[in-house]
Image 1 (cartoon, rainbow, N blue to C red):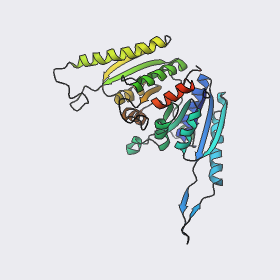
Image 2: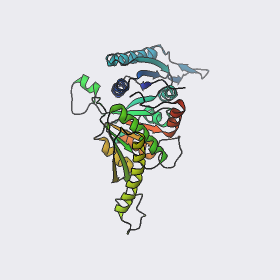
Image 3: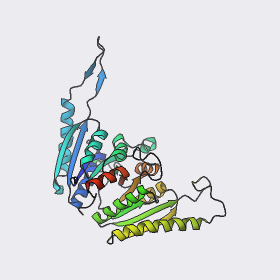
Image 4: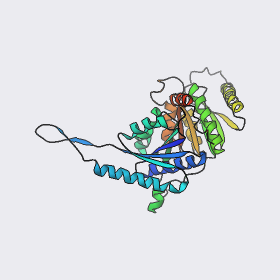
Length: 322
């Protein structure tokens, strides 16, 4: 069964989620897909001070109406995008709702916001859980509005403008997950008619790096050349399968997370696979993808091997309509 060509996006009324909604609408318009907007809510309960020690639950009427208002605002926001839009108010944990609904969608989009200090290191529950467990690729769209000293409320609410994707960067380290990321990055480059750059990192500098064990007589340039040769093999294979896409390539000193974060300042989309080399496949995101999600200056597309396998079974390409 082929999945519907529809982008799933979660909203909660925050500026970050509305910014993600704008990105999702722009993507859906670009590839000719539909858009499904979801607002979920959980009904809180509390222990009641009663003789029987039971629980009292809040009436969900007000909360449900609030969720409906959020959804209506979101649908109105994208009404002029000429994209077919549907909406759902769902009951339950937002991350769980979106993960389950991702089974029936080709792409999921969610927003997140860094607020500086320790909180910037931690993504919200939804934007960290969804990429790790989704059944389709996930785009996490960072929101950094309220910056620059603006005093205009509307400008603060809209935050960063959503731009066409003109430059895509993908991390490639020779792992099966990285090859999956490259495959989806190529699809995105086709969809947006964008420049694609493949980046491989070799942490040679510093005495505490992962390659610090190398004998001092080993020529670091030789190591870089070997990694570049491996990258060329992978990229050449991808280009042979996609002759219309040109892929630039860089092999640089540094970790994949550091380099992708740096490249994100000049890119419109970063693509990462998970779980890289080793680890508990499919359980959690790898350290590189987590770090890039936490610090990227542009949207990040995360593709796990699990969701890629499910998409292959369903016969769905995340940008096949482009």
